[in-house]
Every structure is written in structure tokens, then in C-alpha cells.
Image 1 (spheres, rainbow, N blue to C red):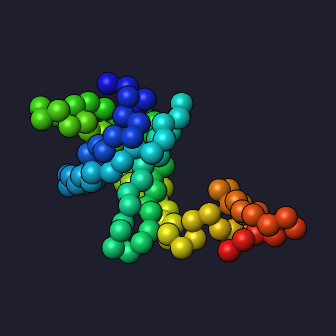
Image 2: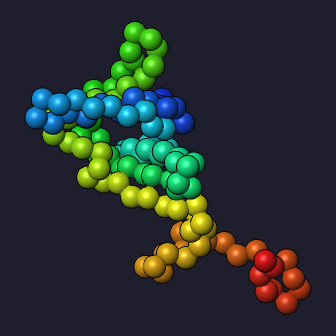
Length: 116
């Protein structure tokens, strides 16, 4: 199974370290040539959680007997190594670093001032 086929799907991501195995169901947000981006929406805490994983850290991609897709990470790789969070209140706003990715002001007035 190709990673490109998983775009928009919720998959079970399995990790292992020192003989312990864990899994998490998360949604595939973006698939690139060398990486894949996952997203989890935490409604209770009003934040989005993202994980970016390089394809070299993926050991296997497949389907379970139940028809559910899964991704198995190489042994010792944990999702927490490339994780970041974004609160819902900061979406579309300017970040501390000054990055304006996704920032868009709405100008509904003739003078060009943003309307709140």
C-alpha cells in the first residue's frame, strides 16, 4: 500500500521501543515525497496536535484483517520526537517567530482596514 493512498484517512500508527509496543489512531494530513504529516484534533483542550515523520522511519504500511490501514514505525522511533501543538485561538494569527503562514486579514472596508 502506498502512503499517497492514505491521505485524509485515519490510520493506526504503531511504535515500539525496548520490547514495548504502543499505538495511536491519527489522521494523515499531508503526504510528501520524503515525509508524512499527521494531525489529531483535541476538542477538549481546543488544540491541534501535529506529527511529522520522515519516510525512512516507516517500516511497514498495510491493512489489518479488519480493513483498517496501519503504519508501523521502525523500532525505537517515537512520534513524540517530531510533535508540535497549535491552540485553536492562535490559528490564522501571527506566531512568536513572526511567521505569517496561514495569516490572512479580511479587508471589508473601503479604506482597507480589517473588519473585526
